[in-house]
Length: 153
Image (cartoon, rainbow, N blue to C red; front, side, top):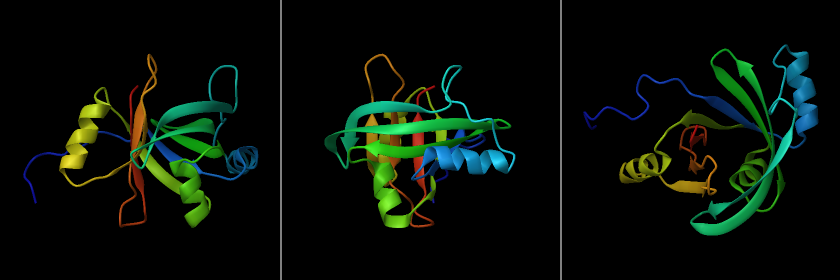
């Protein structure tokens, strides 16, 4: 094992991503348990975002419905794949609803991707829209098939 300190040593995750089939139903469930309120931004509880990027290294376009709730310093992120082939729908089809990824913020996502690939990670999906924050999912681990998301602030 390398003595090099990991990129995320001493940092808190930004969010925990849960993939769901029906985001409104999921929000109602989690709010009934005391999580929330769920809010995407000041005007929307849920927002559908179009993405243009890569999936398994090939060009892809998709849409995802997203909502977030604060849990102290970490967010609970609900994601419903709504259109197109995407990492979220692959997980939903293979495993059903549940934990999809843990996300960290980075000002150097492309650099972190390269360092992760050098350590043996595989990029599952990524999108870097011009003038907007980009992200990537590193493929799920052998332990729990948990993906890691690196996202620009």
